[in-house]
Length: 307
Image 1 (cartoon, rainbow, N blue to C red):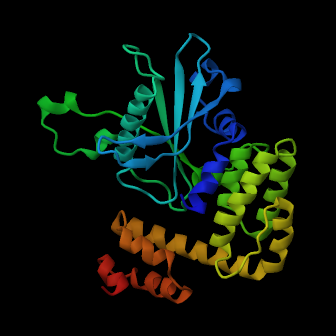
Image 2 (tube, helix red, strand yellow):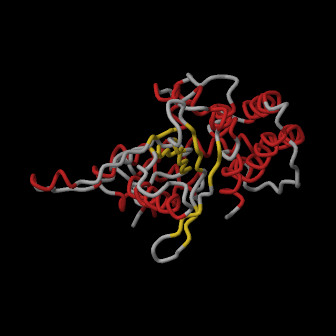
Image 3 (cartoon, rainbow, N blue to C red):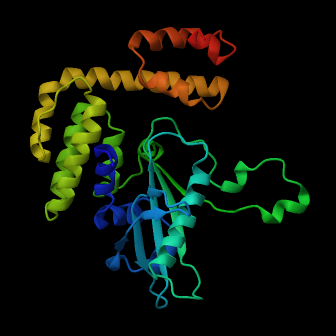
């Protein structure tokens, strides 16, 4: 596992962040039926029939209050780019998870399967537009076969949309993470890091997790040309940022320009292929300006990119 994925995994391995996600951001009546004080992480290494190991994200066990041996599992799938087939991936992960629970005898023989809530936490800039239910990926269904359609829907947490709504709670670790992901520039990041530090005073594990995420995810993305020192303290990272304000402002403007061109392309041509998304991610300011002018009269993506 690379440091990028490991940093996210470290954050969502903390019950305070998971509780913040559900007790301040995602609201549903069933939340009153579970015992949040007994959140328990479960192993998330799934073995397929071909014995190929797949690394899943954090899986939490949530005991219910209205009966013994009944629990709710939360499967958190962090995603930074739009995946058209995400619903299919979730269906695969769910089957592997149930098989793992049976193999580990966490489900007794003949016992019903536990409820699993699949969650996609999306941190990308363009709004998520992939279908939420695997049945919607299947086309041209004869009337007599509709009852055989697989049905599985995941819960989408679109960080950017939540931040843009302005309705995120203030003293909430999950909300602070989302706001850092979609920050408004250097001063906003400094303020948010200070809030994380203050809010996590009694939990050094949370501070280390945020410091790791800031160092391996946020800073390389915002300051790609800056050689960062080996710092693992949130306040030291905050103090260091002031030295790189000009570089941060330039990168922040670049991300904004990229997002504008990305959204314009989707509006005109629909979902973008992976090759186009990669070109946007590595584009120079000159590229973005050229493409934004070209798409005004272009009738295809090839005309925009000169293919």
